[in-house]
Length: 94
Image (cartoon, rainbow, N blue to C red):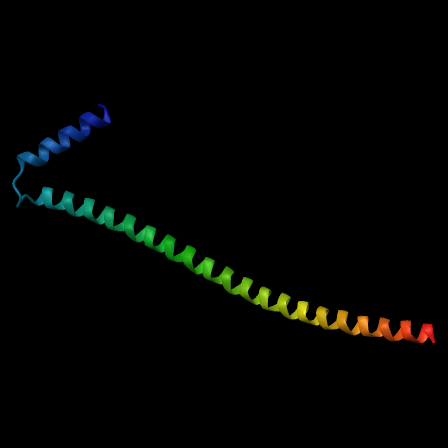
């Protein structure tokens, strides 16, 4: 039996039962529960991705701050070396 035929038979069987039929209510509950579980799984997946992304951003922020500090230190060292070069050039000219 094909999936379409099986689904059609299930649908027709549901229509034959009244809204108070316990098997119908159980099936509806199972379907609703399955949909809820899918949404919950998607929520957990998204939350985990968000936490992972947040951790990456925090790490990158720390790295950027560290690189910025190193850059400032290098700029200061370059300035110091330029001054030293100028002093040496002046000593050579004398």
